[in-house]
Amino acid sequence: MDANQDKDRGDRGPMDPTRKLLKVFGVKVTDYESKTDELLARWASAKDSERAAIQAEALELSADLAHWLREISSHVLERQERVLSSFR
Image (tube, rainbow, N blue to C red):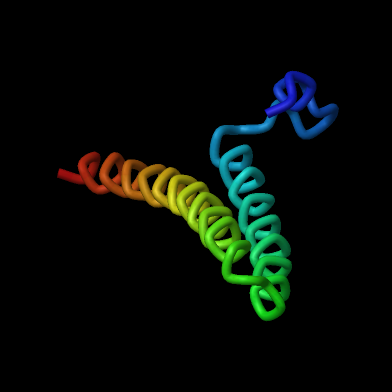
């Protein structure tokens, strides 16, 4: 994240961790969609020698997206646990 994004956001105050995480995740998803659309388009006309590189890039993009999905899931589950534990 850019250091400027951590600074005060005017009347809305500093960005809270949930909003930061959701913003990063949203960017990751849209990047994933556009980059994998490009890979799929390249795949159709790719030579056998190029296909391994396309697959490797798709794997790397998918692994990165899975990481951020786990981050989001973990964040939500931790919050749920904290809330529900408070009601005991």
